[in-house]
Length: 300
Image (tube, rainbow, N blue to C red; front, top):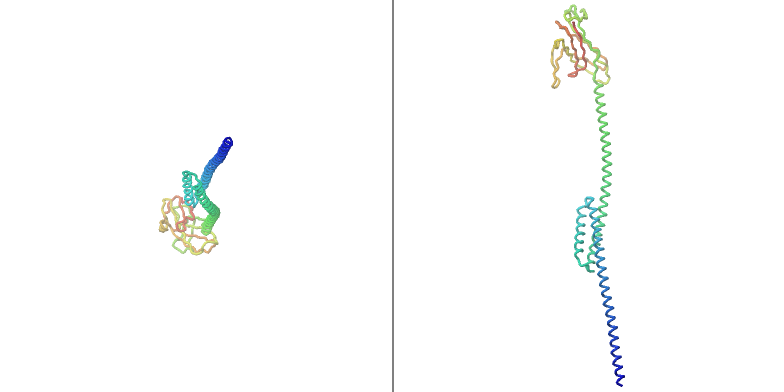
């Protein structure tokens, strides 16, 4: 009887110990599982923190590249880049728990969305600027070509104007001067006898003749020429009158006015005198203050 009681007690103790053992095993398994879950969670949060940080760094790099292009949106891009830098600083200081990571992820998504919008707008501006640059360059090329054409036309017009101006000027040709002895100088010209001479002491008159050439495009009307005759002693013979042309003064022997009608005109004028000196004489014909013809002759 006593043995049966002892066996029952032993069985009861063994049963209790078995229950305790199973409970211990269950507890140990649960603790191990919790530790493993905690480690897994910690590893996951660290990895997610690094992922978010990398995403933020990529976002910052994108902004840095866009800012370096120095577009009209640089100020807006810099402000958004600074927000990314600030979030990176906050993330690096955080403990990396699930709640804070969720907050940073949400802020990152917002910043990423802003970045995409700004990048699209920036690309649109770049394309517009490129188009404007091409149009400006094309316009510059066209303007340069137009300017060259205008310069060429102006040059051609100037050349043509010079040609026309030159063409409208009358040509004085066949300028000749001779000395003459005049017989019966007091009588009518028709009864005068003129004998050419090269002796200064015998000369009574100088005859100056020249031809105005035909010019169909020159202006017709009265033309006045100033004839200047200078003797061997540099004296101006004849009337010795002066005429001012602006700041220039011309001393001349006589003036002759011809009615010009675009056809060849023969001109002959006489300059009476006495006591002509020996030596070389110079004859100059001026159209106003412009020398248009000259010649020389000698008297012995």
